[in-house]
Length: 256
Image (cartoon, rainbow, N blue to C red; front, top):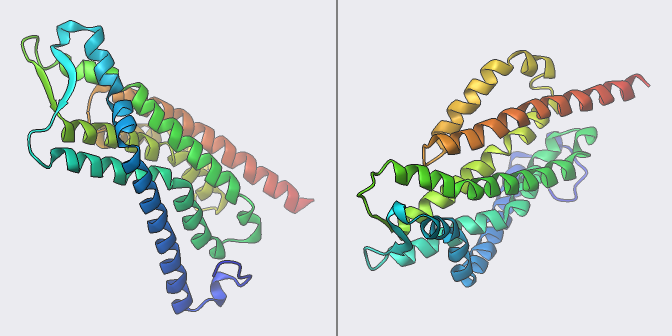
């Protein structure tokens, strides 16, 4: 339970379930608050999401697009608004979600491992934001590549639902992908994997990173693939280095 000094071994199964229910309830409420905030700010958020597409169409008339989005059914606009609110609520509530996940896991960790709570949460939020921004920053280049493959005589008329899905999924996939270094450092700290194993398998890790990047990027274009795969490969090596440094400091302290 929150504030309890008992370890996970001292808690009964019913107390674990009660703790899980409490954490889920807090997380759902945080997402609901974030979703309401996004509903109230829908118009500026939509303008922000469509800015790369509008700027791309304004800069190059040969792309045969006007930057406008179209609703092909009476509920298209409503469903697009709900998607933005829901996923935006998850992003806004991310610090609360990460904190509750960590607090649920913390009773199973040692006191030494609990010290890294704020580091993991803060770094997770920062990395998610960097990944989401990188997806947004490369969106116009991805759209230009995809439009170019349509053909010179094809007019681009995008349905609002499909465009919103593409942008939101790209930002979420990049954001979640950028959380992988935090997971790697955590796995090294709890000694599930060792830095030596991770560094000796770096070639296979990079191949897996690019395969996963190709699967999770909704646009499927090479620009987006490289924009996600290259930073994740660099972050993988950085995560291994951070994990090795923390383990070295832990052993040095233990010896002292």
